[in-house]
Length: 426
Image (tube, rainbow, N blue to C red; front, top):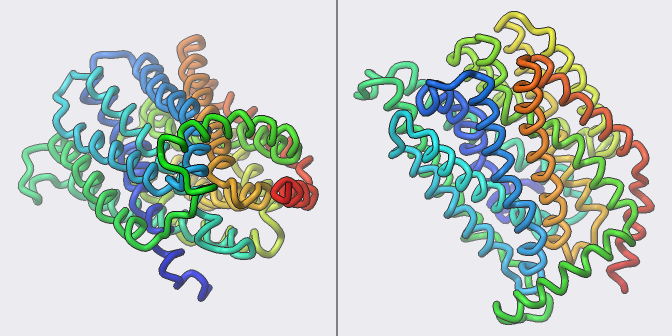
């Protein structure tokens, strides 16, 4: 654990602390609640769910298109940090803009949310790619888990503060809960900005491939992107892992983005659902570190399979859920595995790719992850509209976990590492 005291690793991991405020307070928490009750209160529940799912899918589509291209350009030109900070600036500005969207202005709210989500997801592409430059391979699992753990803690602390503000707005000199929720968007933006500074100051920019100027890097990046398709075809283990990841992370992201909306559709009170999210955050902090240590002991692949098995149980439980107390129980269980499946997927993938081409390959990794986030919420919204049943929509998510597990079982990690070394040697 002394390795985590390294300033570079800590500064890198603190970006998880920074951007998780958006993931928790906006993406999973206040935006779905506020969209349903404030910006689109006149719409039926299934229709507002469909619009929210469509907005999530649109933001993910943009990242699907941009991530592999920008990842290739970043590798060639040594631009990983600059792209990260550019997308973070977009996310921060658009999150703050939600404060100014008035009641009933659903379209403006969705535009701000989509752009903020693009900024958040785009920055994560380059944040993930920096993992291989801040530590060495034996420490990938624990460093990755440390980032997720700090994300849970930081996002949870900020979220807890904003929840208190919305529950007792008068104590903060605010006129209403609505004003408190709007102010929370400004608080998230400020938190994200301030805690991005350590990465900006103390995480070095990995060198590009040949020190090209930005214009030449763009052209080189597009050439490299075409070559990446050929590399993935050669690295068959990487391709198989990406297919597995595509499926199971679809389920994970859908649960994150749509859980509160699902609870609202079942008639649960928004205050109870927000409290459940807080439970997930604070359970997730020690659990993410625990999964990192588990990954070091038994390997990341078996640990990921354990987490997927838990998620399958969660989906079945959610289908039959009747009481809000059960939602709290699900929040605890999800908190135990959510950070683990995300952090160990990142560290397992880092083992399977050529280290000198990490931004390029993590562009593909995030592309598939965001492509999954296109399908999951959209499938949930469509199933809900067609069947008029929120329960059937959540049950459909279980298929993604089962398919992902079946493919992951076939991933040969040792063979994948050998193939990556062979490719890097040329």
